[in-house]
Length: 254
Image 1 (cartoon, rainbow, N blue to C red):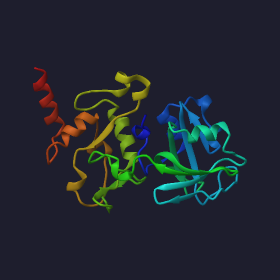
Image 2 (tube, helix red, strand yellow):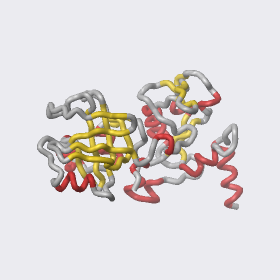
Image 3 (cartoon, rainbow, N blue to C red):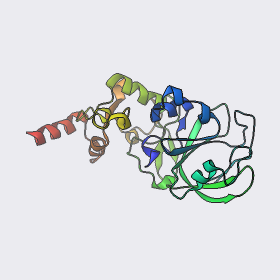
Image 4 (cartoon, rainbow, N blue to C red):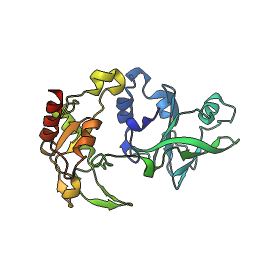
């Protein structure tokens, strides 16, 4: 099971964000979630401080080297401990979050697999990503979002990637809800708990056509859409409007 449906590479998340996205009951929050690594619903979640001490004051010299992570288990951890054996299992499902400042939120580093390990105490493991950033697919306006309230500034990687705004997305969903504004599909109603809260957000004016920094109005500029409708909106260039795609669906249903 891929947790990239809940988390996106290089996005920042607080523990409260993670609890909400995973629907963690209040009575199961904190505790093991604050110890550096925990297992929930058969998924391991690693929280790695790099160059910074954790909440207990320990600094295990974790490192990020390229897209890999050198990581150390809890103090006194040994290779034969059940938790370490579970993490190293060939079918383990492990998600990693990291930060360089213990006062800031965690960045999602993706799903990882143990590449090498040392039988030391604490245990040392080199984690490598299962899916690289270049393989991760995004719709044209579902690209990464820093915590700012402006959009449109370009950052060059190998293609132009437009800076995004997470707060604007949240405001859009607060106003318009979680049903697709084209076909009215709602993931929570159709899939239950696993689909609760999931929807994509479409820019009515494509970012690529603006080519400058601009202040985003989430009520004017954004609409919630399901992935199918989102893909069809961007099937043409310039994209179809919400009403145009809605009319296509109405014609097909006659």
